[in-house]
Image: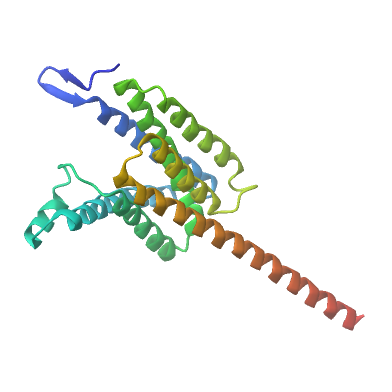
Length: 234
């Protein structure tokens, strides 16, 4: 197993922090490469990525503080002291979606395409984080999770625009995250979060499927009207 800390002279580095850093770099690469395929502005994508990460951390601390702080002063202290332990996964999820939705509306970008892109980038980041558990704790069963994230990225990045409607990648990503989380981190405090992921995944999938069917119905109606118009003219 790898050491938990690496000391170089008087400087100590937490090994798991290296995996998180590599995960962030892969997240940025995934967002950049997938966004570039769709023709999105690279500069705006990186700005959106940094804002999303900042918002996720802030909301995560805010949700955590709401559940633990007893006074307003304690609430404020817990929010800005991000270096101290204590985060809310639900808060991180909400904090991620808020800026994504807001800026997509402002820039007239497709929200579903953007969350698909960010999901693929995050799948690479999570793959590296799970690999860290293998190296640091010797839990080789996490290799299955690592392989799952890599397979998800490889498969969905190839089919995303040609065979899969926008929003479906995000839906699949949420479902897989909930499944892997339940398998490897079956803690009671996470069960509500897993349920939230599954619910959101189902809602997005159902909404996008319904929208697709409605689009098809509208196209059929338009085609029928055009056909009737042509018959009258002839």
